[in-house]
Structures are given as structure tokens and as C-alpha cells.
Length: 234
Ligand code: ATP
Image 1 (cartoon, rainbow, N blue to C red):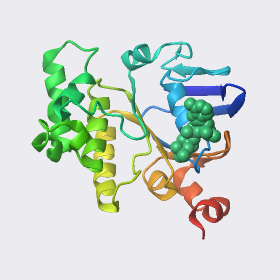
Image 2: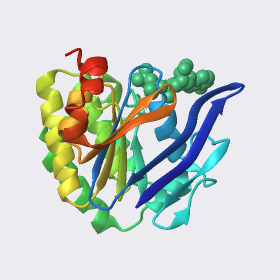
Image 3: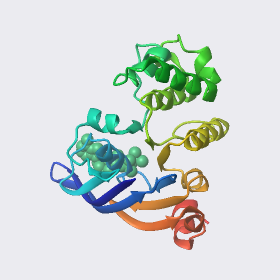
């Protein structure tokens, strides 16, 4: 459903992505793993239309979306949970969720998605009137995931799901991601924690200093001696 071909991205004179090729097939959870500064956020931001590539193509559902602007990409069915959540801090959790639905007008469908999000995250329901900036880190991540779901995406891009969160909370979020996936949304998960990322994905890509160095079945990647040595220290 998504194909990235030969993607090259630079900030000014400094190139950070070098000929990235990857694909996400219908029904998949795909992970991109790599250490700090590898270019994971840059890749996800480029798919979302927030960064412009120097070269390469992004094809989604058969159409070339490389030059579309972010809101057009959201309307095509791709939405992003950004690194660091980036909520509207002065608005309530509920208002943040509704911001995710800004391009929709079918009230019944919006209500259905809202119910699904509150079913996924009962804690968010309890806190819906709370100012987002005062939510805990975990609640903010729930709110950011919920906001992205409110555009009813077919592809959800998640940048650093686990960052700064306790293992128990990450387990809950992973469980939510699996429920979102079962409801028919494809997932691209970008993670520094390689164990979390690969344990729950169908396939994975390893990104190192702007290049894909390994890819394949996620269980095989987790057992790859090079991955074990470089990322798991075993
Ligand atoms: P992390 O896991 O630490 O978030 P990452 O893999 O997501 O890292 P990126 O954030 O994509 O990596 O950064 C890749 C490279 O691009 C880094 O060297 C970073 O300093 C650089 N970079 C990122 N954003 C900008 C920017 N806006 N301007 C200039 N350089 C940038």
C-alpha cells in the first residue's frame, strides 16, 4: 500500500537519507529501527509531507504523493503520531482529539472513532476535560495516538512509541496498537527500542546513518547476529 523508492533527504547542505527503499503491504505492521540520528524521524516526516525529498518517490495506494502537502496526505489516509507527542498543550484532551477530525464532517463516523479511542484508552475518557499540557507522559501519548486516529487513517505512522514511558505502559500501548491494527489500520512503527519494535511487527528495516542496512521478517531480524551485537549488546 505504501512504497518508498530511492528517497534522499537533506537539511540544507547536510544529506541525512540516502536512497531509502521500503514498502508496507496491506495488513502489515512494519518497524523501522535504528539508533539516535539514524534518520528515522526524517523518514516518517517525509512520508507525512513535512520534509521535502531531494530525490525519490513515495507511492501510496497506487498514486504518487511525493509532492502533496501534509493535510492532503492526511486526507489520503495517512496520519502521524509525532515524536514527543506535540499536543496542543493549552487545549483539553477532548479538543486535541477533535483537532484530528478537522477534515471530516460525518458526525456519526466521528462519534464511532471517538468511542473506539475511549474504549482503547479508558484513562483518556476519564481525563478528556483535562488540559493536555498537564496530562502525564503516558496519557499524552494516548491522546496523540487518539488524535491521529480521529482522521480515520488507513496507515498510521508512529514515531517513538515508547520514548520516556514505563515498560508497563508501553505494554498497554502495544496492546492498543494491535487492536488498532486488527480494526484494519496498517502501522509503520519507528522505534529506538529494537526489541519492542521487532517483537510486534511482521517485518522490519534497520536504518543506519541514513541507509537501510538490513530488512526482512522481524523475528529473523531479532535473531540476526549483527542486530544482536549492535543493538542488543548480546
Ligand atoms: P532520534 O532517534 O534521536 O530521534 P532519528 O533517527 O529520528 O533520531 P532524525 O531526527 O531523523 O534521526 O535526524 C537525522 C539527522 O538529521 C540528525 O543528524 C539530525 O541532527 C539531523 N536533523 C534532523 N532534523 C533537522 C533539522 N530540522 N535541521 C537540521 N538537521 C536536522
